[in-house]
Image (cartoon, rainbow, N blue to C red; front, side, top):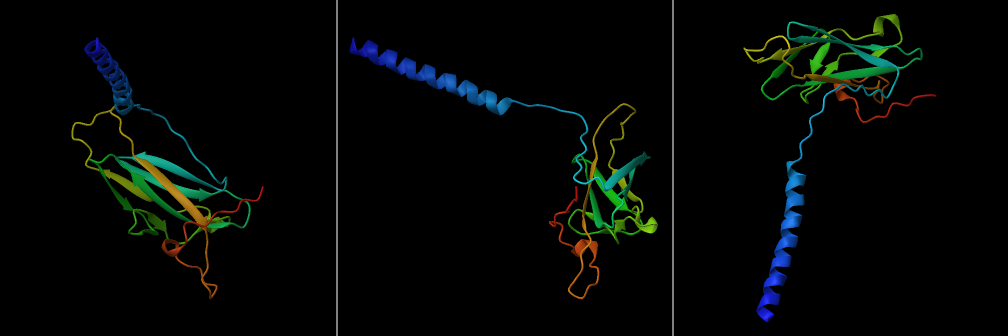
Length: 170
């Protein structure tokens, strides 16, 4: 009788353990794929315009505010691991941190309304790529208010504090 009770107790423990293992395996085997596009805007004052030509994204960041704001701009791209990105453009400089910085600022005056074109060339495209194939190259940009040193001189965009919060007047 004792042996039978012992066997039933061991079987109950094993059954409980098996039930919890199934849940854990399901947790680690779940995979979700999503597609789409979401634009996140913290300020209504800047926007990015993208054009695509012969495996090159052409980007311009423009300022559309009517206040006296002036902001620095930086941008970077993200591509699948097998592809690399090459950047070029007048007045754009590699910051060495993955971002390309626009030399100067954009603001509300006619000559500062937009950056020059930043070309993001997509390299190592599969040789068998054809119309209808898809992959994603995401380009982001960030802005921060123009900043000045203790002498009142404007500092370079790559030297700016990119953690500075932009204050928006409602």
